Image (cartoon, rainbow, N blue to C red):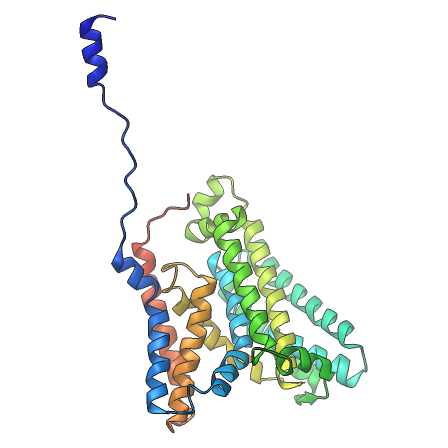
Length: 340
């Protein structure tokens, strides 16, 4: 090798070394702002309502009583991640709980068979929603609004517009009566589902593809992702989890009400969109949704203890939904389109 060649070789540029990721305090603060606000709100009401709000009885009651809303909100974020709305989740919950009540309490079916029938109804609802949305290309908002209304009418018909009680106490035992560390088992069911969805979206190939579909369906389709298949399974999963939520709901109250379950729709949407501003800002995520549910519940419970009238619940949920949607859209616009 000549001297000139050696000089050229020594002057050849070296491949760039990847820079270590910088610690971004602003991004970290944004991710955990809702968690900090939840803790701060709890501490505030602990000072304003001393000896009651932060008592273990009240804390365990909030954790257990809101498990149904947590699971319903988690059911919602699955189709939302794919870019679809499912307005039928609350009606599906009500149908599932009513099927259990009618079959078990009135017709004498075993609890296991009644739960299986309720879950099958959830599968049917998911398939019907997916069929109309994907085959007829009707917007998910319109389809699920229609199925929600249809299901509500069906529930009123099979229940004769009455609350049905007398569900097998074994279901109540395994939802709210049996406790671990003083907290009803319902909370742990919600926590397990939260972990499963978090792992699926963050650490599986299908979950990463689903995030990609939610950002751009056309790009996903051109990349070889079977977009309609993924949307179908998301809507099916939403129907199944909503039905499972109905089972929990029936176990929580030991009865089935033909209308009260539908009131959970607005809180579920508020929690889902508010959760999208936390932990993984710009994405619907399980842990953010969990935190959002308890942020809203802490606020409502604390204000109620202070003597505020019950209309505060509608104000809180409605205001939180509008604010959460605005914040989540702002955050999503700042997120890089990176799914590697």
